[in-house]
Amino acid sequence: MFVLIVGCGRVGSAIAHSMLAEGHEVSVLDEDPEAIALLDRGHASGWEERGGRFTVGTALEIDALLAAGVEQADAFVASTDGDNTNLVIAQIAKRRFDVERVVVRVLDPHRARWYAEQGLQTVCPTQTAIELLEAAVRGQIRFEGVSG
Amino acid sequence: MYVLIVGAGKVGWNLARELIAKGHEVTVIESDPTRYAVVEEELEHSVQYGDGSELWVLERAGVERAELVIAVTGDDEDNILISQVAREKYGVERVVARCNNPRNLEHFELLGVKPAISATDLILRLIEHEVPKYGLVHLLDLPEERLEIIELEVAEGSGAAGRTVRDLQLPDGSLVISILREGGGFVPTGDSLVQAGDEVLLVLDVGIEERVTERFTNTVAPSA
Image (cartoon, rainbow over the protein chains, first blue to last red):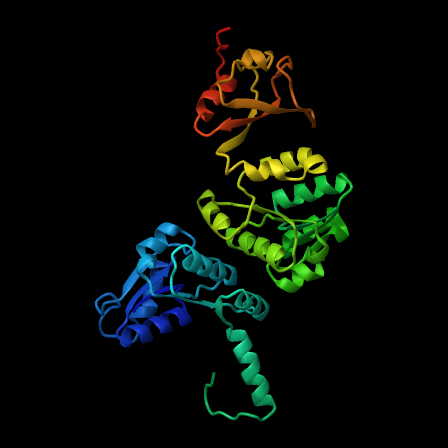
């Protein structure tokens, strides 16, 4: 499938890597031209040489979304560092471009929950961390190294 | 009525001041601590510190009982989100959003955030004039009607100064809707005199702005 990832930070770039490795077509959009460094890191050849796409542009700009291939996208990941930006562009992807699978990273659990109730597929790392940490405090789970 | 304003920038602060002066109950939410401190000196308990896109901040400010929410932060995504939750989660009937970048206007529309206003001065003046009587209805319909409202200042020595509205001979599709003078304003008739220093609000069909503007900026008087 064609995966469009908007926001190339730690989360976005990691998803991009995995998806490309799994053989999907991957396009990444970020407003920072330097963000491609995260996609190149740890590889002998560059992101674009390996078949990935990278577009510089602002998430809210329709032209940038179009250039990054939103019209062809089967899946859309909103993973910029702004909750509100993610929630807005995810709705644009869904309603305007009919992207079938839209997932949104939302750090604020309250906004994540409410928008999930409205039908958006939100992922809230904060909520996940809270649940894991609570379980760890209660001794319900035990892990070595990094978990979650 | 109870009005909740998110963003205490130039627009938010002035709107708050005007609406308070008109006897409305107003709360402004501001997320920048420095700005908050400045505005708090004047507005005191009417301004609250916090990120207005956080639901609990909206709730603390009483969003559920607000009759009007005005989202006028400097970020369009924030204004969209605030408007969306105000209306859809908290059931606020009237929401006005500022659109900072006109290219984002289509996002506001797509997500049902109406009206979205990009001319900040205009919001202030129109709310000042329209809210007590009609609510915000006039403003709401304008973008869809393909009309625009512009504000022009009548320069000293301009061809318009000293003429009546009728003598301005404005092109078809334009209408002077208000003249603002010395802190007040009125709806003019054809016989109203336009003076240098006036601010004139006009409603026009899209595309004739230049022809209208030249009537006010040209020093050569229009032919009678």
